[in-house]
Image (tube, rainbow, N blue to C red; front, side):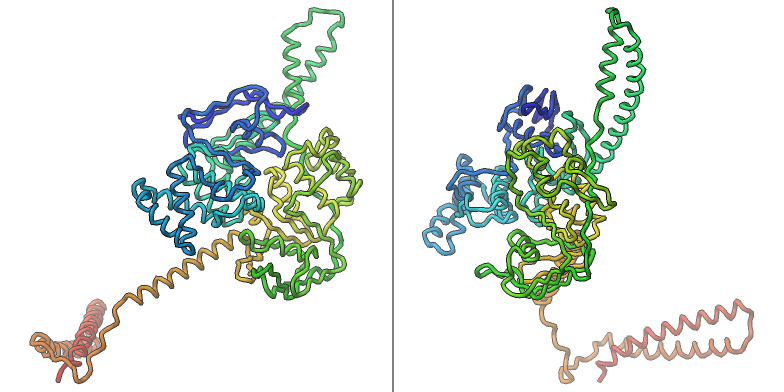
Length: 631
């Protein structure tokens, strides 16, 4: 069943055309990701599909009676709304009932009136069979860290608002879910839960994301916007990479052929007399078609990050017993570490554990409560902050770069002008002279990254560098960071990015300590899973031991039981059988030692002696058991 049809959609902003005449459909159960470089129009397309923006032409049609939910990249709420008001739709009777139940359940521990109200709601919960739904709502709120339903949303941070918006979107249980960068501002544990939830959910999904693990595990189709056109790939991220490479190779071959043919056609056009009005029209039309194909740009200009790194002395950075608290909450205590040249460290932990605070202490932006941070004299920090840099919206892109440096030296000694460097960073000349206010969110973040790198740092600190950057930029940034000669600290929710670049972690686990873990993020998650499994086994073993009845005490001498009549007869018979077998074995041994008989006979004798010995051992063991009870 078709859930969404998009037909001949076009959109331009002033002189910039985002896409033209695009058409696609999404069927029930499909999980589709929309990818493309920053500024190509992905978020704009989602806003048009959801009715938050109009297109220049074309139409969007959803199937009738379809419940559609949309998670905006930067969700907005009504001023003064509490979490309860923002998350629960009061027009849905079942959801309203569950909302009241959750609210009074939360307050019933301290408010007797709320406890009474809770009791009044129980019959309605039973009558409407709302318990399964309530369980799902509780799980979603818990996994997303949404607990205080009375907190005002407009007082929350951007990350907390994103969690509230995500909770609202999932609780609505839509048929068709549209997500714009769902993993931004979520911690790694929450992202893994969301990934698992969406992979198993029975719904239709359209999302924009740059999380490559998400693309690999959740999606079954990828739609790419490239050069204003759509390209569809029926498969996950691995399939997309393979088929995209094939498409670009085929396109390059076609363009090369078109350029060669264009040369010949151009010669033909030039040979014709200018006054002649009877030039073959079909040749002229073909020439224009060839000209269009031959002038195609293949791919994006590649971002070649080769910025010179400042010289590093013997001393890098030493952290001595630093501690930091806010109010009654201690983030970390007495942490020490001596940074070495080439360190590649990832910092992970749930939101609110103090990751950004830790980075700010390292750079000297905020002081620790106790302890010391001793920086080497040659260290030049390059700090890419999680907060988006504030640029003058009227300044041109090239002016923003020139504020830092007009000429930059690369690692190979080559000098690049600000314009050349911008071109490497996928800002072509036409964009360099446009105001910053016309850039997309991803383009502004890329510009912010460029300003950090052109300062030639030898100690890079990147706080959520993957937010809003497209996959192409991420790949090239990763290649640069792999060859970066200085020290590197990364905070990122992008597991692929972390796995590729770091070799050990600082883990803020929420117990006032920072754990220094040797390995990347996947290694850490596997270790955590193993530790959890071992802990569970210990708990189960302890529980089993607790539930088992105490063993009966062994009979004392005064309680020594007697052999039964049957056991007494068996005991007497064993004595006779053991004596008989022992006599038989002695005779066989004498016969074997005599040396008479051929090789086969001697082998048979040896085997028989061994079998009798085993029988004697077995019967002696039974005789010993029974002898314990002989008076």
